[in-house]
Length: 173
Image 1 (cartoon, rainbow, N blue to C red):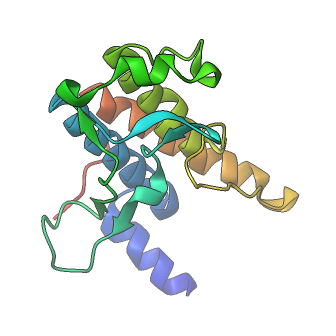
Image 2 (cartoon, one colour):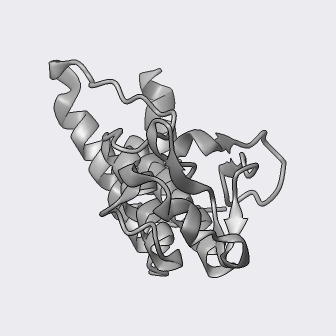
């Protein structure tokens, strides 16, 4: 395993294959959500019986089989059954749920902001504030520093991609 990791590190031209992969995954999460929001699509964020349901989370991205789609992306988005467009947004539905007050969901921009921050970003950081179906489990204390480095890298990459920034660790052909 050690020799294979050494080969992978050399092929990636990065100081750490694990952190490079963390960057790629965070970047792709940000790129997907940016593409949806630019197309005026909410992945599906609304108040429900459990609080605020938000489909913008990592459980709605899967690793693609090798050879499918673009070879530059590892992830594919799914679970659009609750997605809606700006035209389908119902602010009166949000107003009818008392538990959603104060989260900004009464406006289209507020829904997209919630998805970007309280949905995807907080899940990548290790929080499970919104009702996403993601249950984060803390790493053992012996691995805590590595977990923080991985999560920080994913969040940094996510923010850069979501903002339309430059991918400083692109996929190499």
